[in-house]
Image (cartoon, rainbow, N blue to C red; front, side, top):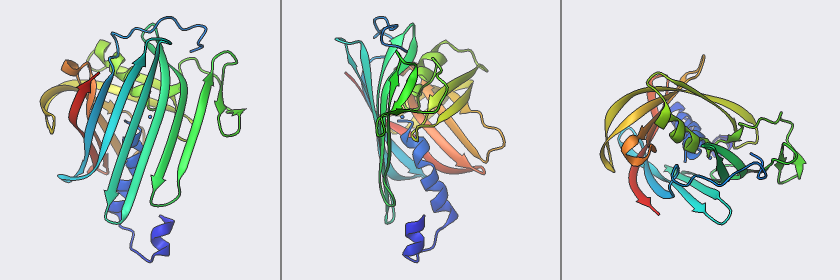
Length: 257
């Protein structure tokens, strides 16, 4: 927010809360090759999903999440983008990821993240080196100082794993993921599967399973909704802080490739 202070403009808590949600939303949209067997394309079908970003009933931006599949090397490519504008502020976040499926599990191969807009641009790119069991920072060509975990996946692709797992989970189940975030740092994400709800979205009315992000001692809440009739596609995400809506991601259009 340094740029706002230099301009002598007021920084309202609501604006800060809204912008703090961008990373989470953008990323909604964010193991050895020798060990991988042929991917199971029936589990994840290529698609292009387009979303509206809302707050308080008004639209502030758009997002896209696109998954493609290359049968020649059994590799999935995921692209996500979120673009938001609020008054004189702008924020664009993009995430590229490649992964394979091995026995129904996502195995990340590479990831790249870029952020542009108001303020300083940011980015990170990493390669999952399965033969050496390390993650390489593409900028420095040096391994990250993280312990190698076979189950660690990039943050954008973990939503695809969440789709697969929720399809098999019972109400009340808890799901845990070890991820590499957009900063190249390790994180643990925990979710609790809840009941089905009927949603009214720009896409239309649809039944979806609510999945809640589990956090301890946090003022933030993040809820996801995955629709069984759309192969457990992410159709809605809402972030709140101190009980107030920060931003919501709502499905508008879904194309199958």
